Length: 572
Image (cartoon, rainbow, N blue to C red):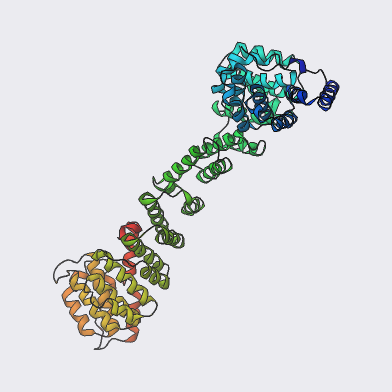
């Protein structure tokens, strides 16, 4: 192996020696002639680096570069600068230095590249190189050697090289480590115990490390312990999640936090805790926008959101929670038809459980920002219906008028006209409503017209409209009535009762009385259409009959009944 750095001579036995050597090197810089100034500075940088003083080394190296920009192409300067960036945890900056082309093909440069790769969490990727060139760290002064050898030991554990790992760990343990260094060595010893199948031993070691002085070692030991216990089925996913949540504030700001957030997100998903999963994954993607896997996390969020609202997993959630999750993460709604389908499905479910305000808000946003033309008019009709069901006729009118479009199919155009007429009638604008549907002779048009007359107290015109409804429904004398026909007949009898049309009632009794006796409305019809003892209908009997005749089925009731069987989107 070809070595680039000569660091052994900068090894110092204790703090006093460090202070003494630093003073000597600083004095050398102070008295150095211009021709020897850069060499004197580089000696101080080598000393700082050899003793793991990263910030100090970077400061000196920056001054060297300022006086001679050409040093950026010097292999030793580049390696010292990248290594110092690593020492202070600036891994991205370290990579920029260490992957500079001037270090290509150099063994020590490759070793440091692998060190940074391992520090970023890719132990498996770094392990082969560290196994090959790890011996380069042996002559390094103790502060630097200890830090790097611990990483090398963990990397060889990752590839299952027990013998090499044991050799390194034994040497580290014998090198009088500080409490912090000892904690990091013990963490790797726990990894080795896990590799050898001594799971209880690994857990015991990690629990000891968790009580130790080193924050990073505590964090890593806690994570490894939880993952091992979960794999052994000694704790549940819920317990694992609770333990890992405690670690979110134990270590912040680098790949380890990103990995923890991503792992928590996966655990929440495995427990169908979608809101917590999406919140955690969003934090990972937001806090670490430049991470190589940030886009992967964003895709995981999108996939989860799509599974909830396109693949119907949200159906297993309480409706209020389903809409709350959607609103919190609606930026994940896909563009185009898939997003429109998602909104449609969610609105259907909300209407199905009578969460009308939430459904209306969804469709309002769809109309304003996503749809145009015929699609906008179609969804506008659905939204208007929701407002009518919520007794908000002004809003229903606004939506219908705001979503007007040309080229509508006759059925959709008629539906929108009926909804607008209902909205006008509900605002007591009966004349406008009747004028709107005046040319409409369809069964639904007549039914709506009868309701408008009914709400005006115009019983005679209501009865006339209902006669046309009965006729258009296909009801015939002597033929059994369908449930819908029987209901229309009861409504007609009610209107005739209220209008005092005994002659009309008599005709209904004669023509359809026997058939009504065979329906579920027989008793109500008998009361409503009963012949009075004398030639006139008394007000008291009218009150009694109207009290029973609550089955009058209006235009909106027909929609409500349909929504009990079909989703909102099925109306058009």
